[in-house]
Length: 199
Image (tube, rainbow, N blue to C red; front, side):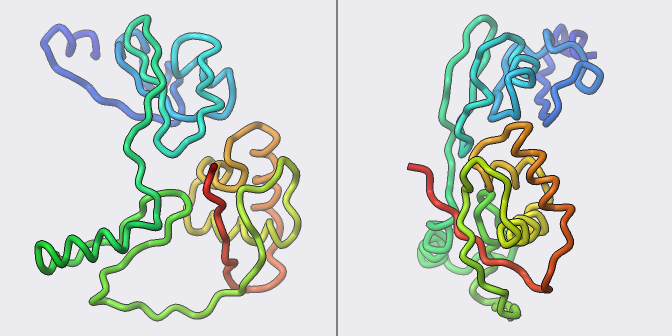
């Protein structure tokens, strides 16, 4: 289908977390690719179509490999961290007046949902912990596991949680996250998580 579309000058944009041939067809039909951080070197080779590209060690936060035919270039896409979003929303409201109410905006794995100032939401106070991400390369403690479960409840993606908790993915880190998510929570309540900004 993609080869026929290309011959008719039809462009196709596809996105996947699992670049397997059975899911997306022959990758030769995707002449230009943007590959973000992946779990390991094998997945990097599968996604980029060549070995030793380093896609598994990309730092995330908008870092991609741009593959165009034989050329591979590292690019940095626009990335908006969570911190400046409320100020940007206020500036936009001041400049262009009231904006229609929209769904909350999520800007990154560490971002909180942002609701318009006109619609305050009352939320019960969460249980506070001293957990700070990213963690060193080790299994999480019981308290850290509770914070990981709270983060997973917010993000809903083990890939995003693994990246947020450790800064990068690996099979060992994936196993630790899986174990942390399987542990029963000792106390009800959410955990407060602090994310360290990468230097």
